[in-house]
Image (spheres, rainbow, N blue to C red):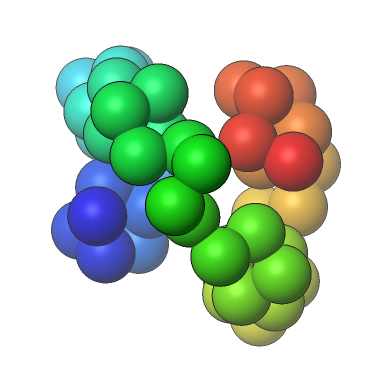
Length: 52
C-alpha cells in the first residue's frame, strides 16, 4: 500500500491506490493516511480521488 500512496502521479498509481483502498478501506488508519498526505502535500488529491 505504501507504494500506491507514495507517488500519486500517474493514472496507474491512482488506479492502484484506489483499488487497494477499496480492498482494505476498513483496515486503513485514516488518521495516519491523512498525516502522510499532509506531509506529501497531496491533501487535495486525496479528497479528489475519494481517499479522505
